[in-house]
Image (cartoon, rainbow, N blue to C red; front, top):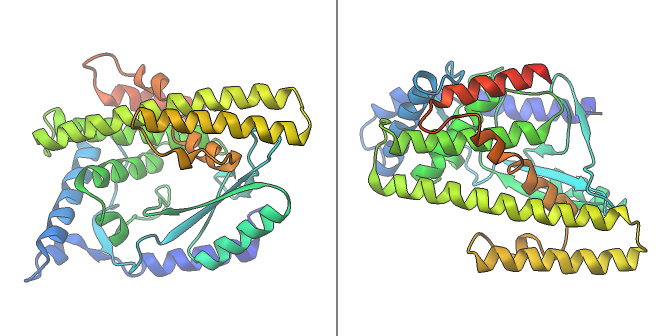
Length: 312
């Protein structure tokens, strides 16, 4: 279960952030504003308008305010999985359903939870997050941790998080995160490359390169997952299982490096929690691509995903 103590602490920590929101328009009017910060703030206002008007995302007042969180990663996400099967440990939350991760605004709490899970014999992963979404319940601010991202990554992140406020299938983390990944990257391509207000040749090349990398990584993760599922289905002795999964993970990691899609350390040594966490953001990307015909409007894809989410 989510647990009343955890939920109360998380809600309080999030409320403290939301209460510090400042309108971006007011910040931009201040003299002596750092030029890089000003550029990121203007870019944020432009992309939120684009997400609303061109993509059809539910924007509301989100990303019209800013909060300095004084941290590079205000949120730490813990995930866990079983070592003998590709299955995540799940937490149950009100309204959003069962999810394979738990977020902490305090790194010490995240590490303590991870240690308990690891002591129970699970693979565990703790990763930082530079942004989070309240799923449309509140007007999400731009965090300073997000604003510190390069322009292309910033736009991808904002569209990703706004997608969560628009489409959400309770209890289906892979659909929610992968669909948001698709919309974040494809929306950014539209913003920088396809007549959007951010039209820029260099950034267009960068955003297309990043999307190609994400798709390539997704294919490697999927192949590794399929091989591991076959391994686990045979229920080999633990020693054999660990030896084979280490070999499979190392092979996939080498492919990441050889194709310049990532680092071998992402997959080796093997960690089912890490792999499932990567797959959360890279499952079904090609299926999402097919929701939009060549040269078609991303709104068609959004409509298809909304219908899919409503249908469960």
